[in-house]
Picture 1 (cartoon, helix red, strand yellow):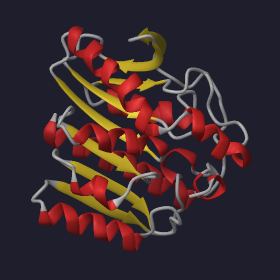
Picture 2 (cartoon, helix red, strand yellow; picture 1 turned 30 degrees about the horizontal axis):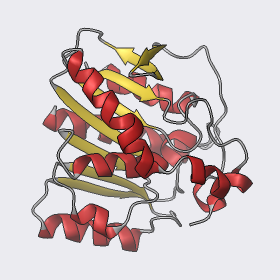
Picture 3 (tube, rainbow, N blue to C red; picture 1 turned 180 degrees about the horizontal axis):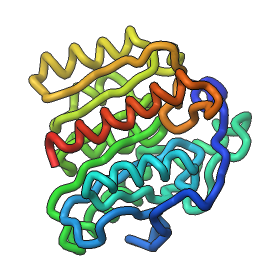
Picture 4 (cartoon, helix red, strand yellow; picture 1 turned 120 degrees about the vertical axis):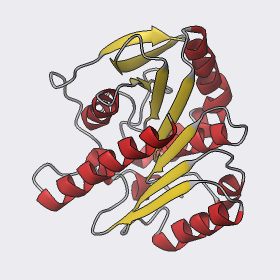
Length: 235
């Protein structure tokens, strides 16, 4: 998969509309939002554009408003994609598989050391691969993949925790036909799941929707609420 198909419409980095703050956890900077004394955490793993994306942080704030300690970690150490034409070179230094062992698992341990008893995770595009790998050994209690990239059918067949897959009807990266294969694999393996394909939207719409497009905004907000509702079932 080349970069431009999965990375259209880079997000605008904008501050001033956030209720959280940036802290350091397990050597990583992370945007955190929500109750500091919550025993339940939700990790939101970004797409290639990184943890500073305004709309992704707004999703974290929404998740936090449900009573969770929400985190958006910087798995790129300050080096997100800035030029989508160079994404293939960027991926050499930032493969999602490497991030699982180098960043995600230490972050999980740090949260447990803080007294967190349950952890959910949602991955957006690139981040979906990180999250799905964490499900294979049940290192988290619940997962969600939003317009996933770098995920394949074998990954889905290895899932061991409840998982939601929220995808776009017009997604060229993981088209509806492939999402239906994912759903069939989850059914065959008797994994609790929620699969939904949203009409009229493209890959990345949940955090890169056009503010001036009422249909995109409505669909993005619907998906974000579906994410929160899914997390509530298992956390």
